[in-house]
Amino acid sequence: MPADPKGVLTGVHFLDGNQAACEGALAAGCRFVAGYPITPAAEIIERFARRIPAVGGVFIQMEDELAASMAMQGAAWGGQKTMAVTSGPGLSLMMETLGYAFITETPGVWVDVQRGGPGTGLPTAPAQGDMQQIKWGSHGDYEIIALCPQSPQECFDFTVRAFNLAETWRVPVFLMMDEAVGHMTERVVIPEAGALEVVARAFAAPGQAPAAGPAPAMARAGDGHRLHVTGHTRDDRGFPSLTAQAQDRLMRRLVGKIRDHAQQLVDLREDGVDGADVVVLSYGIVSRVAQAAVEAARAQGLKVGHARLVIAWPFPDQRIHDLAASAKAILVPELNLGQMVREVQRAAAGATKIISLPHAGGAVFEPGAILDGILEASR
Image (tube, rainbow, N blue to C red):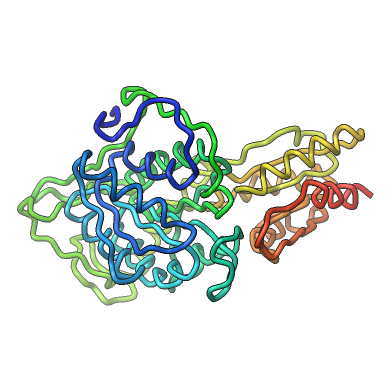
């Protein structure tokens, strides 16, 4: 369905990534955001708080990020499209609620504007140190979807996409930004509302049995349902059933929603990877620097390809396996000391050299550092 025009600020703007993500949420139909001010993500909720009275919705500042994540989930069960916004320390507080959102199949978007860590770390500087935390930080088995924008334009586009994925699959969806993308200002084009395709919430009628399929329609509080939302293992009616059989049935369905459909969810943008001796795999802000390094290497006559993780989770295992079978080396630069490179190593299964190019964060790579890595990998 087309977007609600009230939330679409059509036109050409100069926005930073945080502001663009806010506009993407509004365009996607988000009308409830809960948050707690944290650097470098605060601009998202500041803009939302200013914009939402004219659009019709609610922003609430909670006492901490754990409360913010639960408030947005409560609003989701009231029928709203919802979002929570944070950075590293606040994300750590949200980990228990992430598991709750998964087991209750609560759709929503979590925005993480990553900064240097751990601890207080570098509040105003970029990093990519939360990539594994969102996948493994909560307890038990669960699956998520995570998108990695590299520009303010993508912050807008990917936020709309994140809400559509959350509604389609009823899973937590993350927008994994970083301080550099969040605070850079660039041209952002917001189309007419009619040109934006948004996925509407599918609501179940009272008394309606859950439909077959990976993501059943959602009950809405106040519609006359006998509603029971629980973090316990549950049966097909939604009521607690604390047995091994119920656990196996529920978890295989919930995890299978993503694992069984991974091939239609993964998004790996490729440039010149066919026939390349070295493939550079990157995501987020590093992709912009990596592209410059790749082009410099090509100017020297090297066969270098570039693959960009637009969706980091689910990870494109099969495609990475295929690339490893043809390339002499895969170079993985990232603003951490080696997180997504572990996924590359696992998917490659020893078929080629996997070279980590780590950076502890606090600044972005210089193109020359990645170029040096390419030259070393080519030897």
